Image 1 (tube, rainbow, N blue to C red):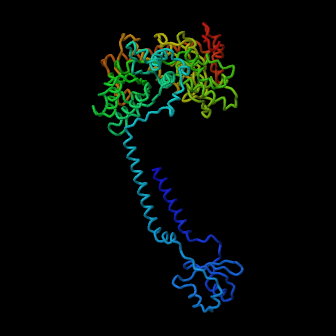
Image 2: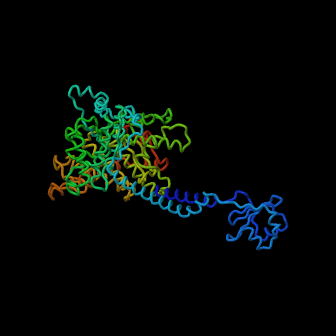
Image 3: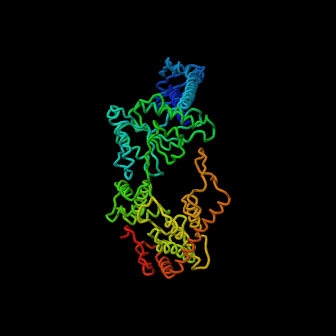
Length: 617
């Protein structure tokens, strides 16, 4: 439609230009003033006319003083006949230089043919433009089968990313070194009869760097890199996905050695036979073509396929067998040392103040992925720019951590004095119980400033990275979760809706302890099997593999965990009421307590000293 509009405007412009030229073919470039025939006849009789040029029915008159006029006569009569009809004497006519201008052959032909030819040319041109547009639409329809992969415009430039730009995934990089060496030195492997895995599957949570790592492989190997998303294979037309797969592999083989990177491959590689449409489902046809291209009859191509997904459990088994995606590279969330390395990479182009300690930032960000850390430093840079700073300072980074974890400060969300005190009591209960229990994470910050959906928050972070958790840790965590509600009951004798999310999280954890972790009296087994419809990609139900009697036991075990946790929190809050009141008073005054301030505040009330992590020392 855009090209059609452009062509129509061009045709209209050409029409006006031709019309303008045609209308001025016989035009006089002089600026002669118009005159009527009566004035001309009178001037001839007075002898003031020197010359008359007759051009058809147009009269160009030149006076004795070289003044020029233009007039028009009747086309049927000649100029001399017209003068005789006006009664001009013959000697007066003879005294005037009368010149008759003969029309040129070009003017005659243009005057005769242009009114006929011009509309015909415009019609033919318009018809040609319409046919061209229709042909273009047909070409686009036929090009549906071509892949929409993205590759560098100049294949010599490649991706420009190397392993130096990827931090925190040492094991994953070691796995991919073999791929790089094979692409660089294929004869080194083939001489010994070795075959490099054709497919490498990158598995990891969102933001762990799967796409960046694939680009780094292409950059290290210095080969063409074809990038496409799994969803781009499937269209509304039958067979388009399979056609695009063939086209993608054809281009990759032509540029071999090369790398094909398929992001979110689970969009087309889900287990067959589990969705809608039966065996003729378009998505399944696309998957079948991928399987054939990866390990069919043509197996001698030097093309490596790298795919990324965060749902390896839904992939078709045929895709994961040896000869296809037979190598999995797991990208775990980065630990503390890896987070520090990632922060160093993302802070290269940011002017950091000398007080910025990346190690402390890494300690305060457990569970952050590489994308989260990049976003953290970006938010810190934005915050520093808003404050008209020349460098990013540590305070900007700390505030950015809380913004990424909890959301921005809601300065417009102003609490009433009563609500502010309730929030302070609630958060003080969380912080106090966490400080008293030996297996709970240490408190890093307590605040009654609204962030995100929370009116206040208590920030707890572990001392070290943990991959295995003990039952005692979960029991203490349950007590900390319910401590806010318990503190409200202790101080006000009533409760509010502020503990809604605490109850939800506590119930979820307690149920997992019973049904998944085997930490209850019901025994060392799991209860319930989660079912999932593959074509929907989400959990929709849970199959109960236990009786109604066992279900009652599960509910009773969950209630027991929660009641014990509430009783533990109640004892601590009641016993440490002076410490609770001191925390509340300080929060109402300062609104925020950092780890050092909180530790100094509650230390006199505790038998055992409050734990302080290395981040605050």
